[in-house]
Amino acid sequence: MIGGGDWLLSSSLDRRTVLKGASTMALGVLASACVPTAVRSAAAVSAAEERETVYVFNVGSKDVTLIDAANRQVRETRPLGAAVRWLSNEQTYWDGSRIWTYDFPNDRVQAIAIDPKQVAVTKTIAGLGRGPGHSLVVLPDKKKAAVNIAGDNLIAFLDLEHAAVDGTLQTGAFP
Image (cartoon, rainbow, N blue to C red):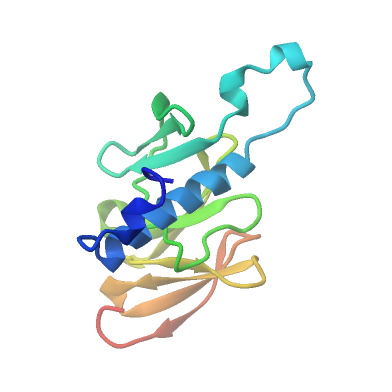
């Protein structure tokens, strides 16, 4: 937690700040739970590999910084090739093996799946429509998702297993 529990009681923090802190912590815990547990001898496993890792997605540089949560030190920064825009504790983005989110390079929305073990984009559903997008939500079955396509005023429903569009729903302006 950030500086113990006292930060939550500060009157200067607004709801968005608290949610950002909570979602960052949740993403870090999620990512640390996904670290592969390959069979190795105890001597071969370093202390750094056993620690929780916080994943910080850097939009401008399209990379991911891995931070050792215990000592708050950067381990490394890896290229991702996508600008992860929004992960929130208010929406589901985890399908059991990948983090689903979206990017909109050249103002074209695409859904992307990030494997936290590889720290890489492993699936892309491109050509969803004109951006921006504002959220992608994995549905309760963990096999489908919905993403808003604000530039085209629609919601796209995605089949995550087959990396395809299931259908779309026209909405009001800029969903």
